[in-house]
Amino acid sequence: MNNTIGIDISKDTLDAHRLAYGQHKQFLNGKTGHAQLVKWIGKQSDPLIIFEATGAYHRQLERVLCTHIIPFVKVNPKQARRFAQASGKLAKTDRVDCEMLAKMGAALQLMPKPFTAENLYDLKELLSARRALIKDRTAAKARKATVINTLIKQQLEKRLRQIKNDIAKIDALMLDVAREDQYISERLDILFSIPGIGVITALMILVDMPEIGALNNKQVASLAGLAPMSQSSGKWMGKARIQGGRPNLRNAIFMPALVAIRHNADLKTKYDQLVTAGKEKKVAITAVMRKLLVLANALLRDNRKWAEKRLDQDGYSSFRMRFSRRSRSFSRARSRSLS
Image 1 (spheres, rainbow, N blue to C red):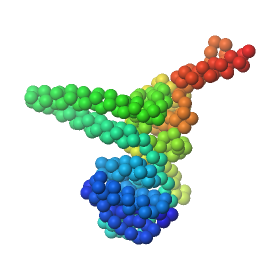
Image 2: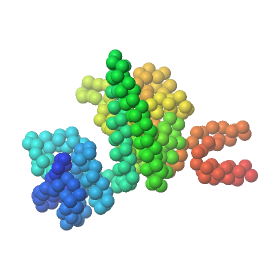
Image 3: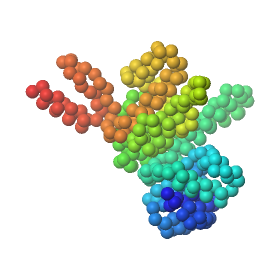
Image 4: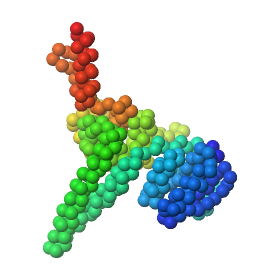
């Protein structure tokens, strides 16, 4: 438990604290500093690195740790800050933060995340750029709806056309990058087989939740922020609400859930049951979103594509499977049973 190293990440520097010896050291947040950090970490057996998610500043460090197969845990900055406050540390400096991160990893016995495929980092960068373009498009459309000046309106129309082309290029490149990696490509095909989930949504799920396929149902719902949190104390019973999680993933799965309600019989039945029971439509849609991710997790865990159960003309139960190999094996099994 004492083999934890907390790293506080800023734009220019990395402050590291080795819990076992109470040792502090600062490195540059760049290639040279990363190499020195890896060498410094290597002096400790079975280390576990704890750092906060800081957007663009932590991505290169995360990639370096994966390359050198050094276990790490990426924590929510709000969670880390609350742990420091609960420990009685009200001061906030880089040196204090890295020390509290190391203690947090040891006290909570945080488990390292699985190592990510190299191509997944490229997909993360492309997806981040795509989301920035979506925001630009939304802002440009809002301005275009209110401007009167002809020149400004023409410029906005030109900007919208450019954004559309840029998004299309990013989508094509994301698909090419995913297909270059056999593991990612196979997982992409499994997700794409689920009615309601398109290629881009499947890529978003793989990027925003790389752990999917190795989690249980409750963990999937919690990570996506789709697990209802109970609110009760004594005799008071509050209304359960969803909170936390990964908002980008939750936003990405909303429209696929609406499509799934129309084209996936099981999810449509689930939605209708909840609405009939008096639940609000938003609550029912949220339940379908959660069920959709749970389904995706189960299929990835079992390494199989989605199948729809149906009855054939003879009354035998068969499956429409988009895995040709599984379809053939099922047909052979059924032929043997009939003979």
